[in-house]
Length: 296
Image (cartoon, rainbow, N blue to C red):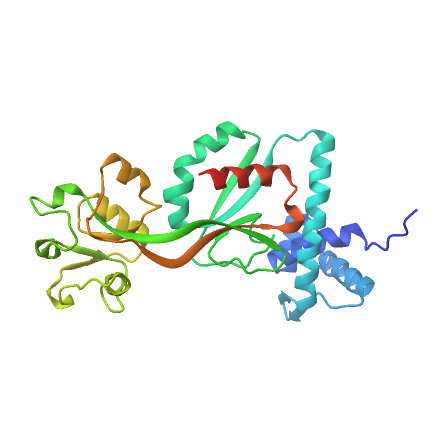
């Protein structure tokens, strides 16, 4: 029989809550115990390990470097225990937290989620919107769509090379040829989501594609701070814009938007990756979600 040296499981449960909440008081509320009971369990675990798991500053706490590492590693163990328990008791619903950029969620995921739920009604898929690349950690989510795949211990699969193309609603042309070289085209409002300087996205596109723009001072810019806003403004006919071609596939297919002739796409170098922790690759629900995302 293997002689495993395991810490008290209750202390691990308390550590998990405290690491997620970064507060002994909030961890106590979640576990229906007193803050002093949480503190006692943490001290018992630290004594067992011979290491400090938290850095304390009055009531404020944060994970120590070793505590952060220990937390990430025991999450895999908790997930395995939960998965094994679900298999034994026949639990049918599995919750998966997917962290994803807002634009990707709105233009790619949400419109296809009804299909996902029909295929996998037992999976409770929770979408966590992020504005920048988060830390890849079980504390944040179970699976990520991110532009930063470099985290050790994660498997990253490329799912999208981002490229931008000039597009507009056909109704705003009013006899103007749908060609990027047409001088009259540049008298239309030009949508941009960069303002440092205003129209910097168009300058970058023109430089990369070796096309010459009219002087920026002669162009009428309409600024929208986010790509999603720029896409929606373009669909409403408010101007010509540079859009992620993957995010407007449906609008291009329906004719709601058209690409402009003589306008090569610009590969931005920003790629999207599907990232899953290597220790969790065999989990059935995660496998199903990964397969579905890769087929979108």
